[in-house]
Amino acid sequence: MEQYVIKGGNPLVGEVEIAGAKNAALAILAAAIMTDETILIENLPDVRDINVLLEAIAGIGAQVDRIDKSTVKINGSTIGDVSVDYEYIKKIRASYYLLGALLGKYKHAEVPLPGGCNIGSRPIDQHLKGFRALGADVDIMHGAIVAKADELHGSHIFLDVVSVGATINIMMAASLAPGRTILENAAREPHVVDVANFLNSMGANIKGAGTDVIRIKGVEKLHRTEYSIIPDQIEAGTFMFAAAATGGDVTVKNVIPKHLEATTAKLEEIGCEVEEFDDAVRVRAPKRLHRTHVKTLPYPGYPTDMQPQIAVTLALAEGTSIVTESIFENRFKYADELSRMGANIKVEGNSAIIDGVKKLTGARVSAPDLRAGAALVIAGLAADGITVVDDIVYIQRGYENFEDKLRSLGAEIERVSNEKEIQKFRLRVG
Image (cartoon, rainbow, N blue to C red; front, side, top):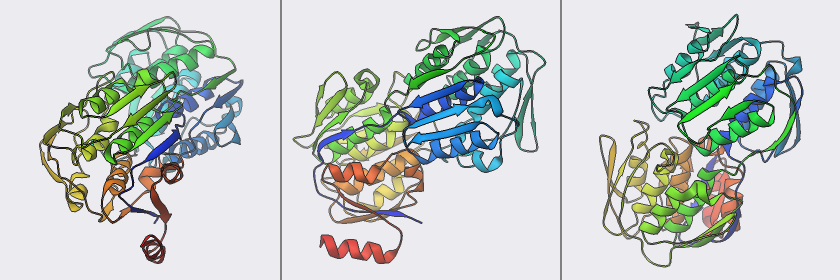
């Protein structure tokens, strides 16, 4: 198993380029199989989740041609199987997007119940409700979701809870369902808008993405397109908080500042200087930061995927902060790891009460999931001494060249695979 070994204490300084949005890319790759013509997708992040989904798509018979690490051609005309292998699903949750894509195109899909990060239950009942409203019979058999329809049809669907996954899945299936679909209480995240834009570029008729009512007029078929994925707002936010926690000065490039407003507002609130440009954001933390309260909410609220990163930053800020998690119930598993580094953090129900300390100290910690793993790396960068982060396979699911990008900002971090390499690093950095 690989680890990150980090010598903390260096402020991060410089410029970093952000990759394409993982969460948009996963849905767009699934949607790419909905036509028999060739689709070209650019600005893909080169991360494990993307590579696994491309394998799953090739596994059902589509032609997948990886032109380079950020560009792929997909042709779905050769798909011979609507049943996705469990091997892929257990690694990444987002392979459930193949349900909406296959159901829309072939009126039949079989996808095992999903895996992914262990951050709490993420029910798929809203997805199934939407498919049924569009005319599909949906059953769970032998651990898989089986959806079939003689014909799909437009419908009026109201989501009981705001769900990004359900919004995207229903949008895909409804794109090829004759008639009009109105989807209410829809998720408004930037990647929902990106998927709608991608489908529209293939000939779909979707209006209202980015609001809570999406209107879809079903079309007969979709066609070829070339499309570039939006930048990853969570990767951008992670580097912004890494700058804040280490007292650094980092310009985050290739971003859409509008997508970062909730993150930017909190950084300014705790005492950072944030400067926005057309496609970049500069974050400076010239002095010790101070307390705030934050609650995660669906977009445009503060993102749940940025919750561990702000908690680590607040662990070093002056005063007492409260972080409330309202999306996932199991998202504070990093708190014990952070305590090992000297943080004063106490979890009560769905809130973490954080008394800021002057410094953290290096320790051996374990990444419990993707975003918490990245947050523990930030803690290591800000801490005195050496930190070893285990289970970094989680981090590699969602961050492209994470250690290289951090090193380019002055971080002392290395990816290692055994104790001997950790010792070598210790000796080298003194």
